Length: 329
Image (cartoon, rainbow, N blue to C red; front, side, top):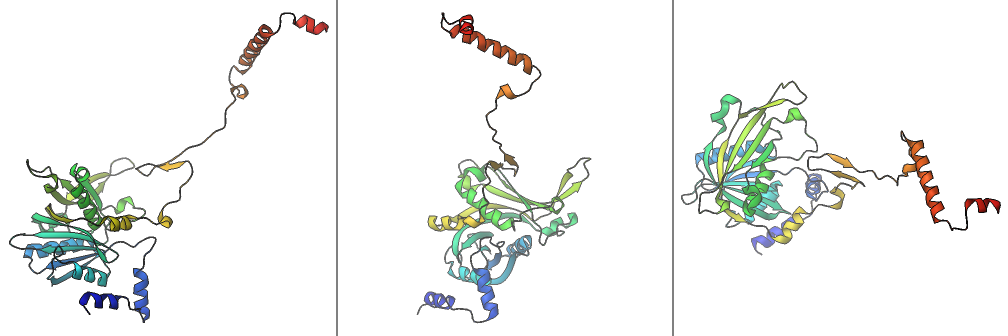
């Protein structure tokens, strides 16, 4: 029996302990899924800068991340099977893989899993990396764990290029953290800004550089209801260049983005919500009879209409049938 077949047989075993049954129940499909967790892992060859870079990626997503510093021999683009097993073992749906080599120095791979199997991933080149320690004077490590950052994407490349669109989705999944229903304004303490630069002449648009900057939001008094915002750079800062990509299978992608009916909001008749979350309602009134509506000149208008109706009736009456004849009859 091969290793793959043995893994499939072992994975189908039923849990016998209470703890094992609880773990399997938590991994079952849910109408409202929990926040995605990420596995941060390094390859066989990683430089000191790349190792520090992975540690800070772990901190940026903490506590929804796990730092796995054992060397992982298999490269995800060559063989992703063991990486899938590792993510399934620790119940992670995202991964960040860092490696360094002579041919591909300082490489970061971001990927997603669906139903325990690889969905899609992209490889980026990391340049101009500055760690948090260089920004410590501005309080870089303050308000780190559990903070929901505001993620901003700048540049037309994120909307026009298909590869950068997928890169935007991957970056948002990893750095966005959880998806709360409501956010308190004073709780918005940090912002992550991705800026795509125009590529040099003669290069494809997907080779454009993406700048990563992280800021702390300082709310000052403004004299009004909303505060005045000041931004201080916290770090880390680096720039990414898209290298390799693996697109998802169309059928698997449709299954991954499918929203169950129970999770969809119930449609309210004649009420719609704008892009900014504002609700607009529509009221339908019956047909209005203006003769029954009281206005300032209601009596004069009614007499004028009655006179016009009598004149029109007299004009349409037969010649021999006059009002006097009708009265004599």
